[in-house]
Structure formats: structure tokens, C-alpha cells
Image (cartoon, rainbow, N blue to C red; front, side, top):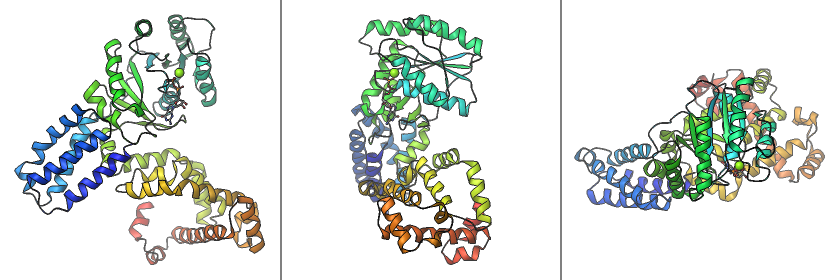
Length: 452
Ligand SMILES: Nc1nc2c(ncn2[C@@H]2O[C@H](COP(=O)(O)OP(=O)(O)O)[C@@H](O)[C@H]2O)c(=O)[nH]1
Ligand SMILES: [Mg+2]
């Protein structure tokens, strides 16, 4: 979400870090570039100015300029200020109240409220083990209530049954008593889109707030609108007791101005990021991890979390057992490819690794990642079950058939088979604990031991 900024920062810091010593002029020049980069990320002039004013005296401190690695120390100062600009720490969603606990989602039309309501429901169910009920108060847009109901059905989340023609305040009261009856611990209220200019709608939201007394009122804001999103938050804060932000569409946002402006402009914590259209595309917002990503230093913690979330434990166990017997098949390879796709593909994974923004953008341009995973999947799917279990069967004429079936060519099939052969050899060696074999291939045995 901060691709542009990361590219800029990498450029600026590469030259700063290379310099054996720094003078005031060099630091000034670096800060000027950082200011420009922030403005291009669509933060307001005030935010950029304040940021530089905070960094500057620290970066020009005698102990920095005279240190042995002044560039590194400037990076650290910028990192610390970024963390602070992003809000310091994650502020968890507060559910400490007598159940049913109400959470209200507000925002402009189309900002992603309904989608986010179902994402949050899934998140709280999975991570906080809460019994959830979702309620739509959007009685104005046709089919808005049905949209939430459908999301509930698709994702196995309870929704309050719809009664045509009921007013939002009456739906609220019905929801509270239904939740008490059916033992729901958290009620998520999805509201209709509104702006502050629309006084009648803003009054309605105050009325709803009075009835449900939410322990959280969350603004859902579109990351693509940049600093405007922060101004919207400020507006809503004037009317309701806003407790947090969820920034949606950060998957499509290459600039990140909304996240960078929010604390300064509206002083409301960002609690989550929406990172795609699917129900699982919700990420907890950690300022320090985001600052790492912005500076191209990677976010290994999130990567590891993502990996463990997406792993199908049972499948993994089966694969492991077969591996021990030296039976890694193309079927296993296929399920690994699928796993990778689920985690956002190579490209998605790479955005969490340090210093790869350049390679990543090259790969983006070439469309490498998705294409190859999808292609390999198609190739394996065009094989018969027997072929998948025993690739040795695949002779010339079979290759031709597979190439036709998958819309590829024989060279592609050969490449995949070669990759697979290398992989299964490596796995065999690993399963036998033959670390010498790994060392031959340039893989340090320590790494293998860590993996065990
Ligand atoms: N790419 C992407 N799309 C999103 C995200 N959140 C919501 N959307 C899409 O935005 C559109 C509007 O969402 P909706 O929840 O109906 O907005 P509402 O009018 O505020 O309720 C839908 O097509 C969603 O799939 C996100 O984090 N990433
Ligand atoms: Mg909606």
C-alpha cells in the first residue's frame, strides 16, 4: 500500500547510508526529498511539515553526524517518527462491556461498510472466539439489507432477520433483544452511508448511538481517497463518539496518504486495514510493522502470521508423512501452489520482505507471479491421477497431450517437471535428515535444524 513511498525512501536512504560522514547540507537534502515523498503520498502540507520539523533537530544532533554510521541513525530517527505518525501502537477493538456488546460501523456510501462488517465478524469469531450477530440499518439503499444477509449466509455468520419497512431505531431495539435471547456476544451494526452535510442522516446516527450505546463506533474509510479520508474522520468525530478507523481498499492504494494523515488530522486510531474484497482480507493495523514496510525493511512478523493462518494443518501433516516415505508427488506440489495463491501469491508474500520493492515492481510489470502459479496449476490439472503420482510415466506423447490440455507448450511441461524433480530430491534429503546433501546444494544445515 505504500509502494511509491517505499521506492522513494529506498532511494533516499541508499545514498544517505553510503555516505561515510554526513554534513548538515546532506541531511537537509535528504529531508527535503522525504518531504516531497510524503506530499506525493498525498498527506497534507501540515503533516509533511510537522514530520520534517520533528526529524530535523534529531538528525542534526552532534552525536548523529559524528557517529560511525550516521545514515543508519537517520533511518532510525525517521522510522521512529513514522511509527508515531501512524499512531504508535495498535489499539485493540474494545469489547469489554456487558454482552451483547454493540459495535457500529459508519461512513460514506461505498466506503466498504457492509463488506467490512462481515470481515470484522469473521475476525472476531476466529480470533476472539465471540458469537456474532450482524444487523443492517441501511433501509434506504435498495437491497442493502439483503447484501449483508447474503454475506452472512456465505460466511456462516448470524444476521438479524429482515422485516420490511422497519425503521433503523426499531431494528436496533429488535436486535438488542434478539441478541440477548440467542446469546450473541457482539452485535455489529452496519449503517447507511452518510455525509455531515446530510443533517437528517447525521441526526439518525446520533439516535442509533443513543439506543445501542456502542462500545466501539468505527469509521470505514476508503484509503484511495488519501488525506480526504482523514478529513472525513474528523467530520464524523464531531457528531459521534468515534473510536476507530478501518481503512479499506489499501490493496489498491499505492500512496498511503490516508494512513499517514489519520492521527495528525483526526486523532483516531486506525484499527484494521481492508486488503481485498474477500472476507478474510482484513489485517490488524500495527504502526511499527507498517513503518517497517514503508521503509522497505519488510514485515516478517505479519508474513509468518499470514503463513500460519493459511496453512491447512491436516493437509500439511499428510504431506509430511508422505515426505517421510519419500513420496512427494505432483499432487502435493499442486496443493502447495494453491496454498501460495491463497496467501496472495509470490508478489503478495514479497511485499512483506525487506528491500524487494524494486524486484517486486519489475515482477508486477512482467505479471510473473500469478501467471506462473496459475500456469503450473493448469499443467498439473491436465495430468491424469497416475501421472501426478508417477511423473516418470510422462513421455513425449503424454507431454503433448498435457501441453494441449493446459494451453501451454512442451517446454513449459519440461520446466515444471525439472522443478518438481529438484524439489522432491531436496525434500527426500531433508526427510532423511541428510544435511550434507543440503550443504552440497548450498543450503546451510543450521537452517534445516531451525526448520525441524
Ligand atoms: N479491493 C477492495 N475492495 C473492497 C474492500 N472493501 C470493500 N471493497 C469493495 O467495495 C465495494 C463497496 O463495498 P460495500 O461494503 O458495499 O460498501 P458500503 O456502501 O459502504 O456498504 C464492494 O465492491 C466491495 O467488494 C477492500 O478492502 N479492498
Ligand atoms: Mg452498505
